[in-house]
Length: 309
Image 1 (cartoon, rainbow, N blue to C red):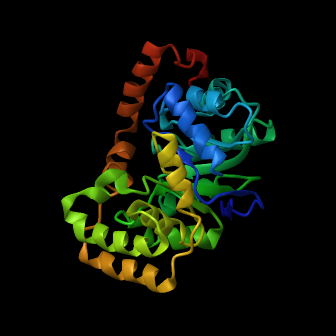
Image 2 (image 1 turned 90 degrees about the vertical axis):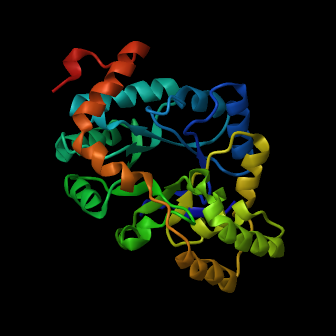
């Protein structure tokens, strides 16, 4: 498996890792994650909001995994960040989190307060690196300027052959500041297989024949071939995990890469989750915070009242 640098840290992570959103939480999910790690995808990404941290924790036992997880935006007050991290550490069964990320921006809580807590976690050895997710250029800049000692090493955003919103500036900005882009939903949340993309799917399928690869492997290879980009596809079976891993094990020619890029202008661009829901989530963060906190209370995972600021 090829590797990519994580920000400016000198740390290397697999070009293709494992996403666990909607991952099965039973033995089949554990087996799939382990198959992915066996195939070289030892970057495993989860989030407290996913409900898969315990599954990941069970799966990575005995493996030298690079573990990434996320703190939910309704936990962005200083004490809540600390408590959320402690809870994630316990669920994951690890002594430290390799990459701790802010899941979504939350305009209702000062980013300086949140980033102060993130830096404290690094100082205390609970977190190695700090990342963000679904942050715009302006939000990344504000978050970085709010930090005193450390740098944001990554931004996890949606990016696929049909969801290319980050090419409008965020990808170049991330490259310029040295922050790795971690692409989630690199297959467009399955929408690549919609009828409106049939011609595109046929094109990449034909290109795949040259390399003895499937259309999805070509699509994933196209994503990670961009500078500073890794990807974390989810797969529910060991076989699909192996197929994802093999997506990075061939070099597509510049001509074939250009054929795909040139063809994309003929197809409608899939709206990214952050693009369609992001503004709504940010403006209604207090409401969604109450909704999620209610769910947490039902699960018995709500932080104690004294953690509130």
